[in-house]
Amino acid sequence: DAGITQSPRHKVTETGTPVTLRCHQTENHRYMYWYRQDPGHGLRLIHYSYGVKDTDKGEVSDGYSVSRSKTEDFLLTLESATSSQTSVYFCAITAGTYSGANVLTFGAGSRLTVL
Amino acid sequence: EDKVVQSPLSLVVHEGDTVTLNCSYEVTNFRSLLWYKQEKKAPTFLFMLTSSGIEKKSGRLSSILDKKELFSILNITATQTGDSAVYLCAPLARETSGSRLTFGEGTQLTVNP
Image 1 (cartoon, one colour):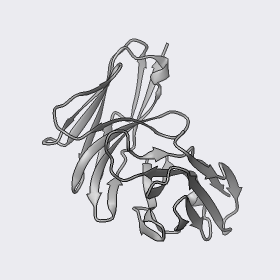
Image 2 (cartoon, chains in turn purple, yellow; image 1 turned 135 degrees about the vertical axis):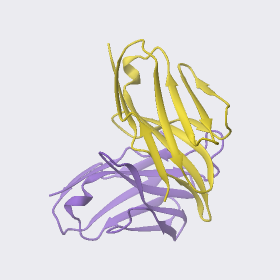
Image 3 (cartoon, rainbow over the protein chains, first blue to last red; image 1 turned 45 degrees about the vertical axis):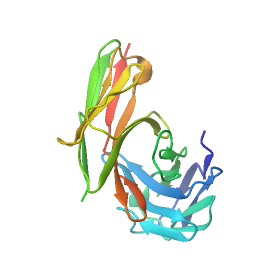
Image 4 (cartoon, chains in turn brown, red; image 1 turned 120 degrees about the vertical axis):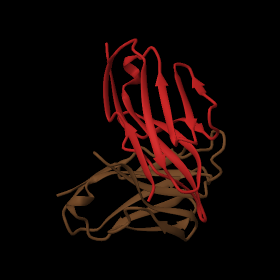
């Protein structure tokens, strides 16, 4: 694998509780992304980071925040989880040049269930 | 707003059949188009297409891009049960702070023995 670790891999929580998902990379890549995947919607971008402390919103960012205090870690936080945030969350990384084999590489995913 | 439409959404074939998966897109600042294969886990990279008309091949899989008509196709010949997966199309666009991938919903391919 490309050196991406997501944790936890599975989590069940209750509505209104905070949840943090962690993405850790060992590739020293500049760009990191959080996607969610839901039936009928495919993969949708939540937030991304283009460097330490540099983040931006994706198309479905409401209800989510992110932080990147060091190159290797990108955290996704649900401040108050809702049932609509039940999903599979994928972290992805790239060095950013998108040439040759340097493309977006995904972590194994984190399955979150909000009851 | 960027738009990516894949068709068909679902396809069931028998081993040995040939399949064609379609992807049409409308993306601002288009750079290239990527295809991914997703089994019961994370998507894995198949192809990146940047130029029109140049067919990319990898074994039984091939893909072509038409930048004028804004579509791409993915062909799989002599399908095998191991080809069963969701195939995702993702146009890549250039942005000020990097690049952006927009994914289609995917085509669920099932290959029966």
